[in-house]
Length: 308
Image (tube, rainbow, N blue to C red):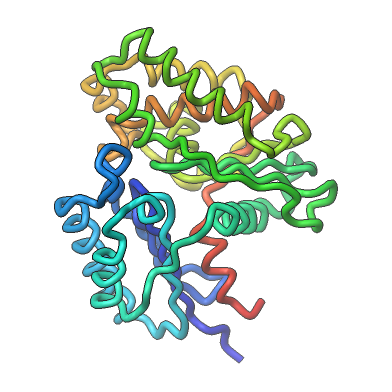
């Protein structure tokens, strides 16, 4: 019997991503940088411009879904729509285009799906030693999820922190490049969130980073000529090299970042804040190495629909 074709959409604060496939085979993997959560931290609402960009991307995805015999579709929305007063406008637009209502995930649900996607994607990697801490840095929030003492134990602790690349950039890093005082204020905000986090990050023997901020920083550490998914996936990086790259990105101007061939234009302004989140998580967890996975919450959503 042929495995059914499933489709997953992950709509976060910065990016909306699509996966279509009869798992483990993936036929389509797409991402659009739409910045849905632009200004939400300040206004409490999704802007018309942000909704327009997101709906345009979903129109493209509707065409891709129509071209495949998809049996089940799951659309998950995360931080931006949790925070927005006009979330119903977004939900109605999604239903009109795709025929499904978005699921607004809780922080715990988001973290569990990120963990499932990342760990499954790293199966067989020798450096994957439990307990594993999965770090998913989004535009509006950062998910920290700690697994049990055995990889088969699943999630032991999880928390969604309201610190992400877009949110912190808009809140603190107003100059280009940011001033020392702005970086210090952003760092203090991050450390306060991490100090109050119930997830015991220092228990982790392996830290796994997923999603665009981490994979972008990894591309810089690996000194790639261009973004290369295969080179980044399952990469094992020394923490000092990651911290050095994060500091470099944070100190750069947007004009300097635009010259980096591995950096997507949609991340040019916010990657400094995102890299600082990663650096502070590593400082609190104190691992020797960072494992990078291109499999993340999108894969977790897709696998939740698969019979395997």
